[in-house]
Length: 212
Image 1: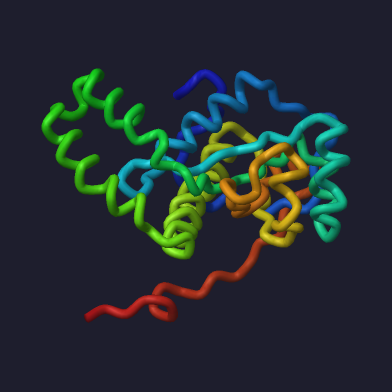
Image 2 (image 1 turned 30 degrees about the vertical axis):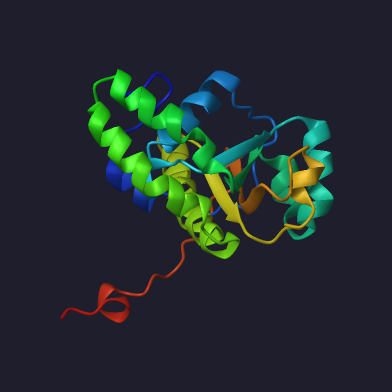
């Protein structure tokens, strides 16, 4: 296990996860452990490995006070959680292509010729992609990393709640980000549950899947 992880029990992580409404405000997560949580979360897959997710970790009282009116229907969660992770997608994510693929070559993960071939193929596609198509990619990839983040948090002994209801047109600028570049995806509250979350019913596989 990594330094701060409490369990690798898959059943405990998956089936023990709940969407928590009230957190213990006395519980704080250190920057070191939060960094580890994020580093584990970003091993999630992404389109051509562009890793377009970006995070704002909102943990200070001042930052929570800024966020609270932008998430007014979830204000109690925001204020009591150890932190709120605002997940954004970077419309200019391909700016990091050279760093990502270059480092892969340096570390021996990829031959130089594969890097050159892949970037040569994807660069014109990304440069000419419509904003709508890019947003679809960002929402998909950011959803993958967000779910992984919540499961990683559970492995560290913390609880979470994904929030989609907030002022998406205001949040980027509220935290000093370029609203045209950074697409808000969701908020994830994280901390220690003050009360056990509700168990909810899930449709069985034969209601949501077909075999052909």
